[in-house]
Image 1 (cartoon, rainbow, N blue to C red):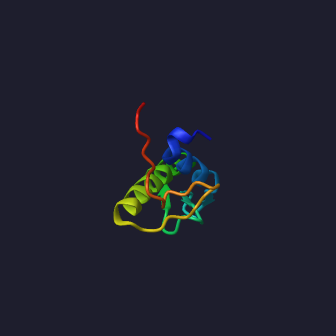
Image 2: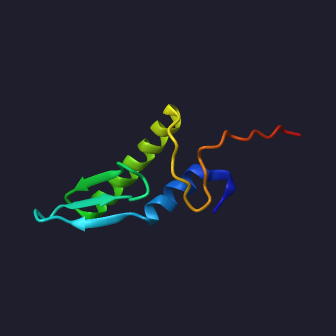
Length: 88
């Protein structure tokens, strides 16, 4: 994982935990158990994966903006204040 892109890394780690189910009506549901409320529904698995990614990205951004505590995934903690490095 790259330290330069922690938000992208966080999204990728979360998506690795995604669970998908084929529903009785032949559509798909996806969720990320560690990210409460992140769910998506679509006609195909590929569409469901895309919708789940979009939902997760929005969930993270809203959570950060509102100061919600986000789960720590693979030692990626988005709850800490950002560290700024002065240019030399």
